[in-house]
Length: 65
Image (cartoon, rainbow, N blue to C red; front, top):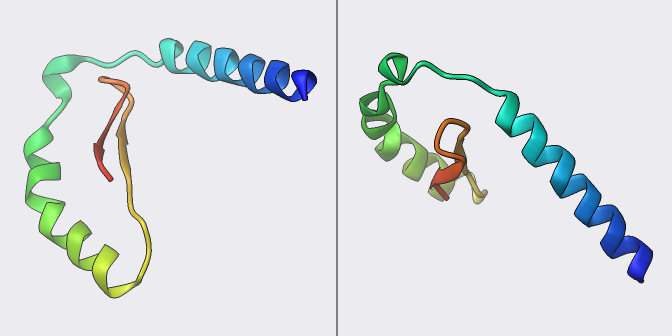
């Protein structure tokens, strides 16, 4: 069990390193596009009986779940 935790911890570390390598120009980001698409995402999640998530690599957080 401890080995599993070590593996998960290592994977999380690698994942965060990869995220940190992503470079964005903040002035090129347009969050209004996502805002306009939110109703579509909500409808899609409702009608397809599924889960939709949008993860912002710049902010490193989920914007829609």
